[in-house]
Length: 368
Image (cartoon, rainbow, N blue to C red):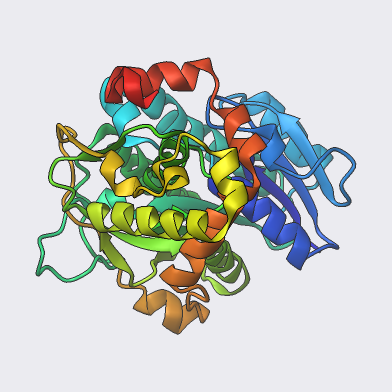
């Protein structure tokens, strides 16, 4: 039986991981912690009273609170998702990324060291750090995919802050013997993703009849992984990963941004054509009038320092952990579209005034 502390539990991947773990391991205890900033949504998590789960509203920078929680709940496993993660936000306000991603990660490492090592806490322990492929920089069209041995070359304040956190995690294993693992994952998509990221932003904007803003020429390439497959990879790293090791996790599934947007438009057009109820619910969507959502595509000025291509070689994770994605992109994107169509109340509730103001600032009033 494990006692998990999941940081950033109310965020996109954290919430999916909590739900995944409780379903797969109902005998374990999961303590979900989140500061509930703009992208954290308590409604993404199981309700109060759910067996084996408790939510705590707290900041990872509050070392005293984290230490009390670890001791009170006999925490033996930390899964660290908490992070500022949106590149655009890191360009316009990097301080929050340094504070949360670097200083916050260090605060957690210090507490884990005190409780597990200095306190002589017996038994197996694991600090699992969830990171990104963005720490490796940008690939050219013919470059080999990132591996665990690829040198770090972060190109945005977000990526730099995650690279710094990765180094801190490694150092606490090498210097103090803290039992850590790290996963560097490619782009995730799926349910509960905050609508500032590409796929949910395009879905929500299309349903509302707003422009679909595509950076530059739309040719930037990302490797996409369904969020449940990412959760499975973390589970495998916790069960079979060696302390001190890093595992690159990806879907071997590269798409340009513009191809993703056009695919989403086509699938929405087909959904509206097959379901008259959607035409009534989302009357502002072009597909409700028999038009194509593609007419909403609007190319906008490229993002500063926009990395051209990311791609992961997940051979080590497959070999050492047995990780193989179970969702194809076709099956995963279908599940994602269905989820957003069926959970309109969720995405409307998270699109509050602060989010709309941010979209308006960076994409224009018509997109907000």
